[in-house]
Length: 382
Image (cartoon, rainbow, N blue to C red; front, top):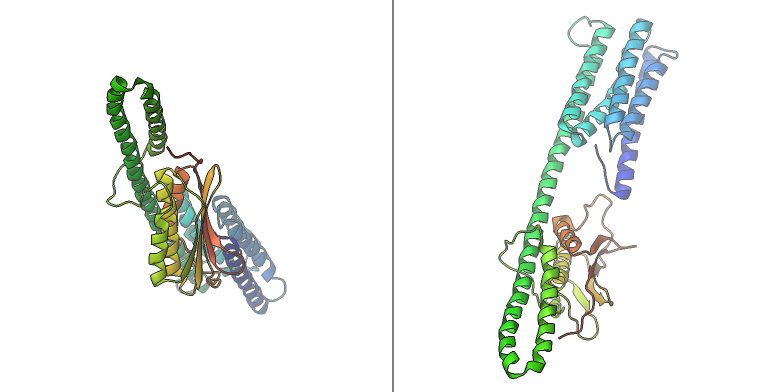
């Protein structure tokens, strides 16, 4: 099964490796006690090869699965050729490794190769039953155990595939919703500029008759408005317009103070730091900064109830605007899911559409940080 996420993945792989190793050791001890001497060695060597393939195939299981199935088939043939002196294959430890490979394949591969690998598992188990000869009554106990282990692996793989599909569909809906919201905002920005250009054009007709020397100033204003409208139009290409409300589209971060004050009534204390002096950001940048702060503060309320303080920092340099929201909540357990959820997926979609970047994750020691950088060249207000 595919496992992602830093130390969580390392711990998970190590735990699975420990389980597989324990199964091999128990199998070796049982065979040595029942059969004696070195009879445990051939089956355990095959089991080690299959289990290593299982660990290597957690993320890309196709080739490791084919290799593991090949080893299992070779073990069955070798047992048959050697006669009744060796324990029958596949062994329970080997089937455990094949079950992991089957689950990984069912979770990550396309339907056809995943189905082929899943079907090969029962084929190997049945082949082992025939190679060992029919038991006195019904299925051999080892064969029944192998079947149950394989079914468990296949069931886990199918369940994880279903969960992944649902999570992917939900994430895509969030991305689409964010694109539509951003498209609505950009549409309004362009409409604002075009309306201004129309008014300026109407005024220009009057000015041209009364004060011809001011025509150049009006044309400069119209050119600047047209340039900004074209820049916004480039960002909106490929998006559709559909939403009911929007974040404020004022030329600066003034509304953040209201947002922070409202949050402080229900959550921990918030310290807000804004750029000095007047800011003239494009409206889509202003609304995105607002949305990021809003989403980050909401996540603090939902996922960090022990946070005592939050810091919202907005900085501006000649080329970019940077917004960062940090809290001091105690470090969450390693297994705790990332705090952003699907909200930050939408924020990342919005930020990247505007040509920026967003990073969210735990801070060293304690707390969580959401940091976004958006291109917003400094402009002189007109």
